[in-house]
Length: 179
View 1 (tube, rainbow, N blue to C red):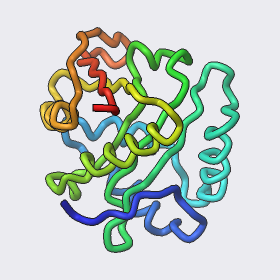
View 2: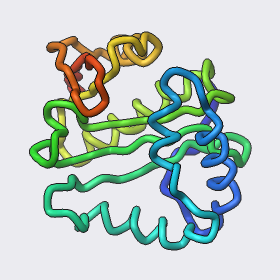
View 3: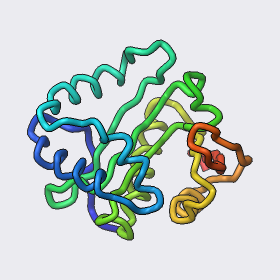
């Protein structure tokens, strides 16, 4: 596996983040639409505001029905090659059914380098440090690469659900982090 630096964004990461956003916006592969949608409205001058929003959602989200979430970014040679969002309140929104504890993105240029696997392992360590020992991951039924990663990391398929908003069938995996 490649060595990644996985951490929160800082004010010094603006250019790397802008490059990452551009890569996500231009990822027209089957599952690139999630990241494209996430960054579709991001404007170049809004980086400091984004940092404030990322910090706020860690402890006190604006929306009462939104989970606390920490966003980590994976850096390789100064470039952002992925991001992972760790969510903590599955009772919020529709996370228990559709969203799960984590969501991650790896842009097309960085795929095939085990980045998602490394980010997940990083997230698992963080969950254990806050005494969360079982996590839920949901994956589009046709995202065989992500399903393979989660199964390799110990994910046990629990069931399938239909997400009417995304019009997709999702595989719901539970991972026991104590195994």
